[in-house]
Image (cartoon, rainbow over all chains, first blue to last red; front, side, top):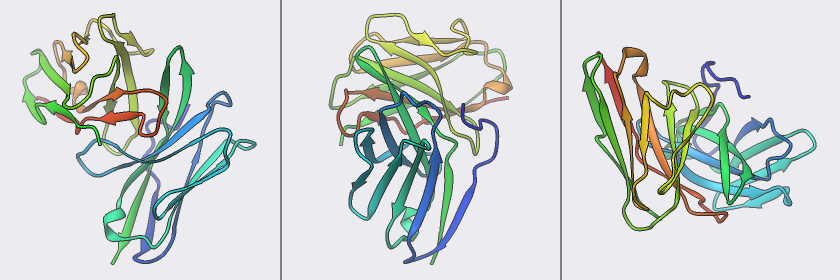
Length: 114
Length: 116
């Protein structure tokens, strides 16, 4: 599975720059992916999702790219703001019965400098 | 968006005692919910999946007799950490699952448990 137990990688950017956060997933059967933002001491917050039949999806200031060939996801944040500072997790989901069972990636800590 | 609450938000207890954490959905009902544990600077680790009215399904390595889950209604689930030890100190997060739509899971704000 993911690198449980290792410290989070960190991405430092200047305010206004674009940020790219990467995630490798492990299960080729995963067909639904979600990016979450987690601020310190809080639960994860949904940002954007993408299904395996797509390779790109855009939201407000965010874009998710999916490369199923190499099992890789990325989250692009345009014009990064200090309020974007948080830990970002990707989650791969595998359908089991009527539910999706999520597995979270290791996360990346984004630090935005004003 | 949907709102999920957890109570308490923080708890400190002595080793050997039991602690109950409540997770409530405030404006929706869901049959499936998840409990996660998160150690500092690490990812969320799924502990168990529960469906209302059924026994929870625990992930490998999670002791079901130590982490008791009661999912008695569509809006309430509880996690009881029995005979807590310092190594159980962690951030516990619940989430409700609404289905295969956008914003599939709604997470609670988490409960910080410190066992002395």
